[in-house]
Length: 122
Image 1 (tube, rainbow, N blue to C red):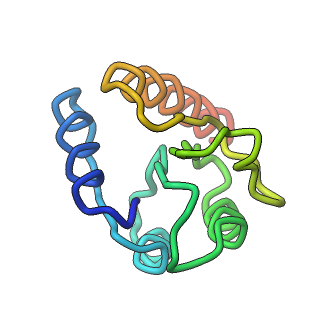
Image 2: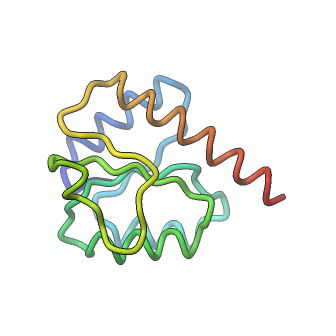
């Protein structure tokens, strides 16, 4: 989820090439609505730190309330220490600009964590 369509498309291409199923969103309200209504819950949410559609702390809080085992990867152009939203701490950070390999590595690790968390709650 990013408000820059070119980045959303780029993330999708890279991750789909690795075998991940990807849904993309241009704003947080649409992403949150999908999380509420879709039966199949994602293992991972990738979001930019800044997005004009909803404050970051509200978005992350609502996502975790709907889906506690969801892992959140925050992409940011800021130092991630300065990009700490109040309340919910993301599971990982990617400092922009990042490489495709850094994206792949973070996604692999966080998806594995999410699947383990789901299995332990079953």
